[in-house]
Image 1 (cartoon, rainbow, N blue to C red):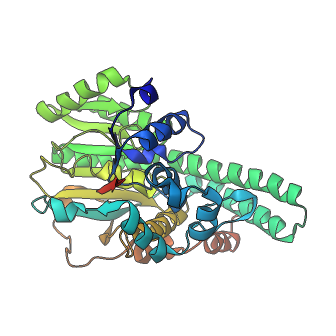
Image 2: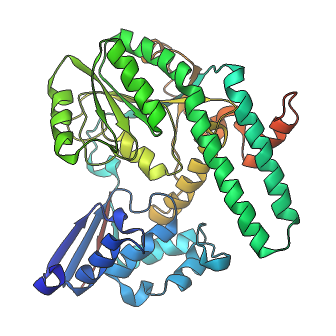
Amino acid sequence: MLLASGFKIVIADESHFLKNAQAKRTSASIPVLQQAQFAILLSGTPALSRPIELHKQLEALCPAVYKNVHDYGNRYCKGGIFGLYQGASNHEELHCLMKATVMIRRLKQDVLAELPVKRRQQVFLDLNEKDTKQIRVLFCELEVIKSKMKACESSEEIESLKVIQKTLINKIYNDSAVAKIPAVLDYLGTVVEAGCKFLVFAHHQPMIKAIHEFLLKKKIGCIRIDGGTPSTSRQTLVNDFQEKDDIKAAVLSIKAAGVGLTLTAASTVIFTELTWTPGDIIQAEDRAHRIGQVASVNVYYLLAYDTSDDIMWEVLQNKLDNLGQVLDGEQNKLEVINSQSSSSPGKQTLTRNILGKQSLTSSSPGKQKTLDSFVKRCSSASDPPVVTQKRKL
C-alpha cells in the first residue's frame, strides 16, 4: 500500500531500527525509501553496536554506492568466515564516504548547547562471595571451551563449541543479575532516603521485579515500564511520573523503555545492569538528559566484581570506539568521573571530583581488558572457578 502511494518525500525517524536485513520492517521500508524522490533518515544512534548495522540504511539512501553487502562487510566490517561481519575496519574511509554521500552529523552538544551537563559515575557494589562463586565456576568452564576451540580443526565441532560458549556467556549474564540483586536493593534504600526522583534501569526480569517489589514494600510511589507494559499505557505512566510529586521512581527496562520517552522530572539515573549494546545505554541515559531538563543529570552505574560487569565495560568501550570513528571521525567513549564505593547519590555529590574524568577502560572493574584476562584470574583462585541522512537528487 505504501509503495503504491508513490510518496515524493519519505522521512524515517529512529532509522536504526532498519539495521536487521531479515526483519519485515526493513524489507517493507527499503523499497518505499528508494522509490521516493527525497528520503530522510533520522537517528541519534544510527548504529547501536557495529558498522554492519548501517548498511541497510545506506543502501536505502544510495544503492549505487552501498548495494553489495559483502563488499561493504569485507571492507568496513572486518569480514569474517561464513559472511559474518561483526567487526570494524577502515573507520576513517567509511566516515569520509558517508559524509560525501549521505550523512549530515549533528552532535547534541552542538545543537543543544543550553542542555545541562551529564555526569557518569561507577559505583562498585560489595557482593557476598557465595553469590559469585558459581559465576566464577562458569567463567572457568568457558575457558575450557575456548581452549578446545583453539585446538579444534573441525568446523562442525567449532560451531558446536560456539553454541556451548554462547550458552555459558548467557548463563553468566543471567546469574550476574541475580547475584547483584541484594546489593542493588541495599543501594536503592539510600537513594530512597534522599527523597529525589530517579530512574532505575535494568535488563533482566528478576532484577526489574525485585526492584519494583522493593519500592512497593517501601511504599515509594513508582511506575514500571518493561516489555510487558501495554503501549497504550506507557504515555499515561510517563505523564504520572512527570507531573505527580508523590511518584518518585521509574523502574525501566533498558530495551523497552530506552527510547521515545521523556522523563526529565528526574535528574538521577541509575543502571543496575549493562547490556552488550552501547546505543541502548546512551539512549536510556537520555530519557532524562533531553529538552526540558533544567538540572545536571547524574548517571550511576552499579557494578560488581566477579560478574559479567568485569568484561562488559570493555566490550561497550570497544564498540563505542569503533562507532565513534565511523560516525564522528574520532574516538568515542563513555567518560566517567572518579569511581566510588557503594554510597547514595546524595553522599557522592559531596566528594565528586568533576575534573577527574577517566574513560571506561581505565576504571573498568578489576581493570580486566579481555575475557581471557578475567578467566585467568579465576583459574588461579582457590575456588574453581544526532544523525540526519539524506538522499540527494
